[in-house]
Length: 79
Ligand SMILES: [Zn+2]
Image 1 (cartoon, rainbow, N blue to C red):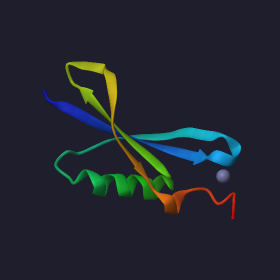
Image 2: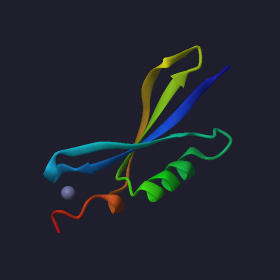
Image 3: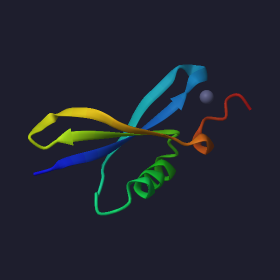
Image 4: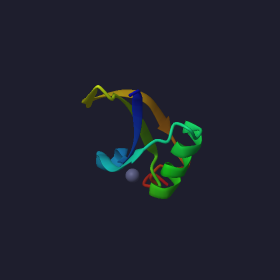
């Protein structure tokens, strides 16, 4: 058993101090990670997607692996 990765989408609004967990997705390591992350962000309109890595031998343990930011999905409060 190897490591596996999950992607978590977050809804963020700095103006309202919002940093909200939205959805969790399992990543398919046979597909390009960046491509999958872009799809999740688009689906949830999420400005932030974090990828967590887990060791299969210790499933409760998640470590932040990578953080993606999508400016185009940021809230429009200040506009
Ligand atoms: Zn906002």
